Amino acid sequence: MNCKKHFFVLLGLLLGVNFNAFAWDYTVGEEDWGEACYASEKNQSGVELTILTQRDNFGPIMEIDPYEDRHGYTFPISIFVDSALISTLDATRGEYFAGMVADISTRELNALASGSFLRIEIARQETVEFSLKGSAKAIQSLMACSQKRRK
Image (cartoon, rainbow, N blue to C red; front, side):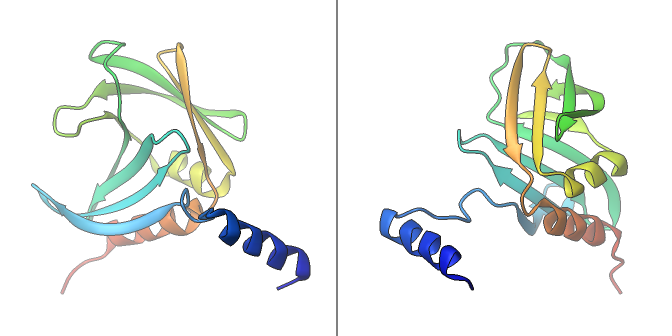
């Protein structure tokens, strides 16, 4: 580790900064329908982005929580990675999940895993932003988990 990095780590410790507080995380858990795989990140405003899929059955869903119901039941969201529009999806107010949800594809997951910054535009009226630092490992683990077959 070089001196400059030591300085910033020491400064962070002295100031009580957790450099991993907003890093992507991968976990496995349970839902009503069985085992699920999760990749998640919480931004500095406390908004959490979770991508989940059922173990052994790839069908990823993106959830943003909390979500205040200001746009009706169904509304468009546009996904921008590093300022490039990746796709526009139909999102809905969650019924099972508390936040808003949208189905996403492998194409969107690959873009998230290879980018550095994510901006989601909700109903062309508001935006929420997330760092994609560390997303590659979490998303790759999510994709591998959902494709494993138990023996």
